[in-house]
Image (cartoon, rainbow, N blue to C red):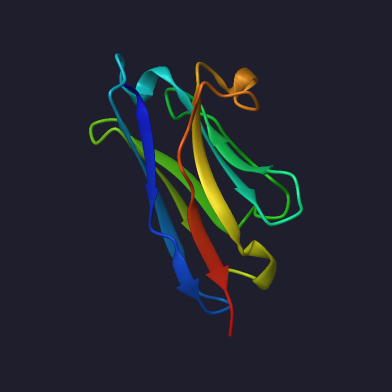
Length: 123
């Protein structure tokens, strides 16, 4: 059974950093066959796309709100994707989800979702 498991969330002060991980297991093919997206959601708001990376890792996209602060990557050998979050701001507080899709064109309707990890930015 394919599964995505996020980790690395927590409480951090404004200006701090966190690295989220998205570990894939049970997939017939490795992460080099899937685009990976990171999304976030706060109570009462729709889930929003944060960043995505192509199946071969050669193309990345970022929401304007995180561009220059967040870095998405994937380690094919470890079957894990990452979201390095720097210069965190109060409005980055959310539950962060990773998702997998056949390609970046379909990442907004992914085939698989993780369970989410809470990121709280607070002083």
